[in-house]
Image (cartoon, rainbow over all chains, first blue to last red; front, side, top):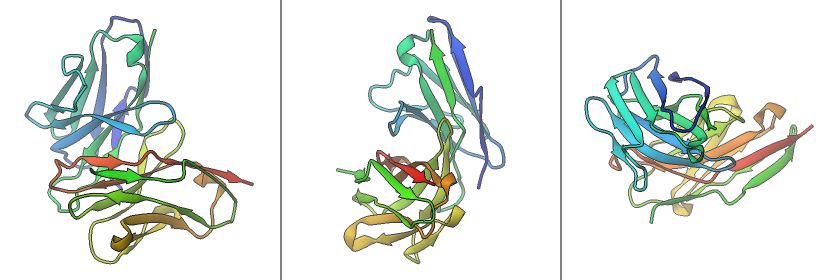
Length: 117
Length: 114
């Protein structure tokens, strides 16, 4: 399957600081990437759809000014958690959508665990 | 409403036993169906997917799933479970027309007894 990387794999930061998470599609180009959040023992919660060269589409209830998404190239999308607070602590996972085929499939990164102190 | 139901929150099987994880969906359009597996602290790995054609789909790690349109189901099976199969399993449904977003089940946690 396709390979998607995330960096960093875990991060600890102080409350009020900003954290950037990178999601890279290593072996295919992705015009669309997704950002998810996952709480312990729960399913995935879609936060936003990241589209290369355009603004991200955020799900209802997700603050776009707090979770900044940039998809500047076909292989890289970034999620920046601005002014992070302890309630932002979570497991963030990205996925890249294969494009140019009818059988579009999401391939996931390994996730980034964020702890805000 | 669009939804995916995984009726079993937690399943425990013995190593070597057969496994079936249930997935039922409610979806207005022709569904694309997926099974993903997540090991603790890890991202999701695609096990298999169904778009069209043969309703019995083979995946990685010896898993298979069968699409039954009449029952709105896409159950995952494995004839003989290995200890390394212990993980969280997620069923998802989507369609190219739905902004490519997936509707996710809540997951089934699989434990394997030695």
